[in-house]
Image (tube, rainbow, N blue to C red; front, side):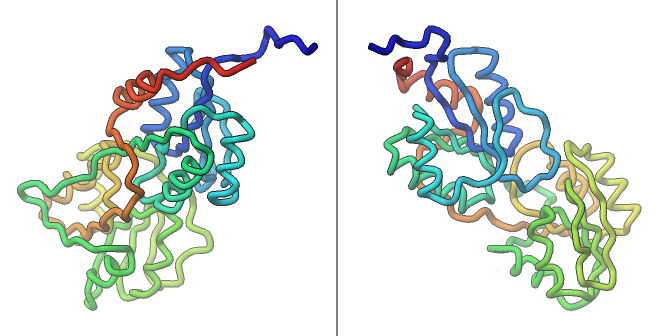
Length: 262
């Protein structure tokens, strides 16, 4: 007869698909509570992610089947998708993997930005459309898309691009006029306004990521009357969704998860 291991962690197991400020805040909140065994998974797109208060793995699972296998093998009791609003493929994989593995799933998604009085927004369905909406005449453009999406700029080489990303853009874009800034938010409105004025920016190219960390550029653009080409969020799976860490914790409590068997 094999006796239970008295040192084994018997708390419910939670996997957070992260890479966002919301995922980090949720992990911190749960670490403070101490009643869940939490692990995080990052897509691996950011080379130097911030430290996280839980065991963390980087890189994909191998699609839907790989994630479903992980959920089963690790006996995950609940899954929270707190990935970036534009990580639609990961969210679709999460929804299907949770269904296959029979694991409760919640999406934690920050609210999208909405147009406010004074905003000069041109909306686009995706990044290629946003680049096209810059027009034919050369412009001075602040690009806030992230390094993985900026290759689309090569379709419009007439513009002068100021590309900001957390990690370096490598190789550089195949356009004649591009400068690069490596920086991680939050960005204050005053600093963003100074940046736009210094580089004589007349258009901002942005994804509708939501959140406070990078909203300063939109406030600065509004104050200066600068056009923002705003890329709409991609469609996401229809799963239960909340917009705050507090609501995510309440969802977990509402599951009434028993302790995992030893």
